[in-house]
Structure formats: structure tokens, C-alpha cells
Image (tube, rainbow, N blue to C red):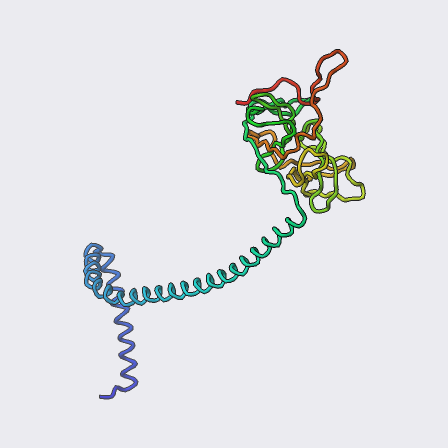
Length: 298
């Protein structure tokens, strides 16, 4: 039987009205008797739970299958990328082998003398002679441990100083901030040479730098290798300021908080002069700037 448009409109209005009334009744009943309404709702949930679980399983299975497909695609892409990387590495391996053979041949032709092996001793700072007139520390390693004058004292960050005095079981390290410390350095990048001179302050200064060369804040300072005391390339510090008298350098190493030092033998100790000389009265005069009563480290 065909329903007329007017009757269909009346049914739709009645349906909307019925839904509104039903919702209002449910709200009123829920407010009036929350216990009973909660019980009804729990019963509806219990009845609907198996059906919802059954309906959710295909969606979960589809998600799992999609994850497996994505995993397969990812593994395929990774495998392709690794194969390409392996091919490139094999090419570089051949280049490295060829360069190694050429290097060995050139060394043989030029009779190049290889650099000597570098040895080092790790020592603990046991005393600090820091004061108004000296900047040095004492370590618990000496001749018995292979320590010699002229060895470089470094830590991971950079140069700390050099071994100035050596006993059988202890040694004294002259820091780069000491008034008597002079280290030939070079400005990394520009190649400008200078002397890093300590003045017993926390920041040594650059002396005898080329006036025509510009030294800027942030320039890296490394040893130049001149003078035969330190090898070239040891990190020293960074330019922290520039004024009319020159530039001062912030050392990479925190010299006030050094607990352990690495005393490195670069084979340059023989180039240093004798540390002691005979005075007019027949006594011995020690190298300046490394004296003074030590302060024990705890």
C-alpha cells in the first residue's frame, strides 16, 4: 500500500517526537533511580559485549594483517638499502686497498722514517702549588714509572702543561698558566703563529703575534711544534677576548679541577736544557716558577 506524502510527514514527526520523549523518560528514570538504571545499562552491556567482540575480531585481524604487510615492505626496503650500502662499501674497500698499496710503495721509495710510538703514564694530582707566584701541581708518578722532564701533561680536553721536575716517585707539572710557561702555538685555520705566555691568571695571553693577522674571538689555538717541547696539533684553548695588548686564551682544560693527568712521552725530552745550574756560591738553582710549598689535594 502506498503511503501518501502527508501521512509520511506525520509519521516522521511522530517518530522524532517519540524519540525525544523516550530520551527524556530515560533521563528522568536515570536521575530518579540511578541504581535500577545502572543495572539495566550493565545488562545491556553484558548482552552487547559478545556481539561487539565478535564484530571487532575481523577488524583486529585486518589490522594485524596490515601490520604484517607493512613489516614485509619495511624489511624489503631495508634489505634493498643494505644491499646498496654493501655495494658502495665494497667499492670503497677496493679504493682503500689500492691507496694502502700505493702508500706502502711511496714510503718504500721515499724511505720515510715512521713516527716513534707514543707512550704515556696516567698519574693522580696529589698537591697543588697554586698561589700568587706559581701555577703547578704535583702528581704521584716519577722516574720509576717512566716519567721524564719535558713530557706533555694533557687531559681529554687539551694541554695542561709539561713535566718540569721529576723525582723517583713524584713529579711537578708546570701549568700553561704559570708566569714562566711559554708555549709556541698557532691559530688553527689562519696559521698565524704566536707564543702562549702564562701570567698566573686563569687565561694566558698570546704574545708576539703578527700584527697584520686578525685574531678573532672563538679561534682555536693549538701547539705549533716549534721549540721542540710539544708536538704540533695539541689542543690548547680558544680565544676568549681581544684587546689592544693582544688576545687571551681560555684553556680547554679546567686547570682548577684537574684530578688525573696523562703524561705523554713524545720523545722530545732530550731537547730540553739541564734544569739545574751551579750558582756562584756552589749551590744549585732550580728552574724558576715551579717552587713554593704545595697544597695537599684531598
